[in-house]
Image (cartoon, helix red, strand yellow):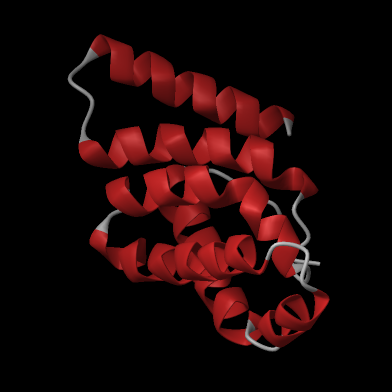
Length: 123
């Protein structure tokens, strides 16, 4: 967590000194997302509602390498939001977590390699 905060601070400082590139802005937003997503259980569709707004923002600013992966996360979170507390719908959604897990892993790898940000690990 300390590394995450330090990385976000370094990126924000660098962004303040020069014109912020789109990739840098995405990385700063991603660091904020990583800090707020620690309480999301990727195996519980209802938890995705907690990150929906951040995921939409990141989808919009994501580089092309992970833009489609964010679209998978956003679509799943929107389905979870629509399901609400309907256990049957949430159970159906839980069967779709494979594609979401794959997308999330792509995002996590890109985050670490390109942004030097560690997003919360999948359980």
